[in-house]
Amino acid sequence: MTIEQTLLQRCDSKCELCTSDSNLTVYEVLPVDISGAESSIMVCDVCHGQINNPDTIDVNHWHCLNSSMWSEVPAVKVMAWRMLKRLSSEGWAHDLLDMLYLDDETLQWAETGSSSSDDDSAPTLDSNGTVFQAGDSVTLIKDLDVKGAGFTAKRGTTVRNISLTGKPDQIEGRVNGVRIVLLTRFLKKAS
Ligand SMILES: [Zn+2]
Image (cartoon, rainbow, N blue to C red):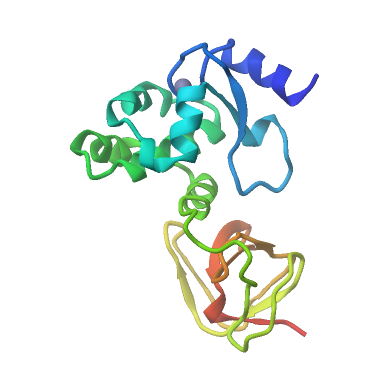
């Protein structure tokens, strides 16, 4: 089955955000390690247009998140979280965001992709100005409290096989088995 077929089955041919059935398309919830149904959602043209072009957001359309945020599908929850975050100046959206629980990994996913204003073409640099590549190993140069995970990543910890996030000041990696976003200014490339 193609990703599209898998998604159509999962969503019962309805937009996974607003349940409309018009002009469904596959939307990949970036950043993703492996493209697939797990990292994609099926959305209608209205949702798709407003996700891609924040200037056209019609606040009332997104009351649909009231139900879709409870989806079992992590990618749908991530997208609901991001849209609620964008709309969080609205009282109702702020309240829903407070209720929306994401596990650590899903929250990192949601946060990593929530800003698209950064320049994707800027290289990711460490504290010494060395360019990071996906797959590099890095060393922490400072103790870091890992928000939400309840532990401190110690200075000197090596994080292997990092991924880039599209933001020049952040990378992703696994510390104590938890996938987290790390600020590159607290890192140096491990030799
Ligand atoms: Zn929709």
